[in-house]
Figure 1: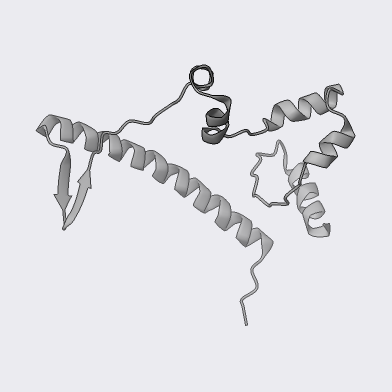
Figure 2: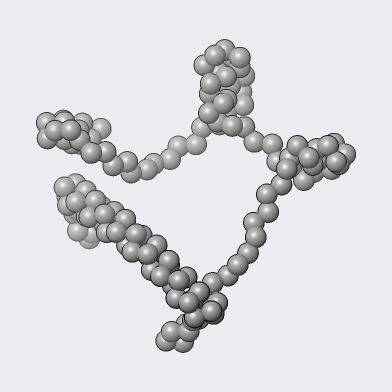
Length: 138
């Protein structure tokens, strides 16, 4: 049988771990900067510690000009090597402005449910009590 977890404890645990994670991310970022500095000072690209090699890798990430590509290759090849995606914000705006009808929007839109945890700092404790009450009712 699973142990019952209270909402208060679960919320406190989540917020505590979230705060620790943020602090660790900052510490990791500083450690990475220190590591890169030490490598540069020693004029090396890797270090071995306790049998684990930690290396600084230099690489390049390609970015392609869609406009230039479209001008330089056939339409068929262009369509083969590119993707066409809908910009969600612009799409919603076009629907709100009436440029895209509600019928078209409904025909081309598939909604996928998801959940996420959202943390919001409350202005006062009364709002917190009301929010907790609402979440327990839902």
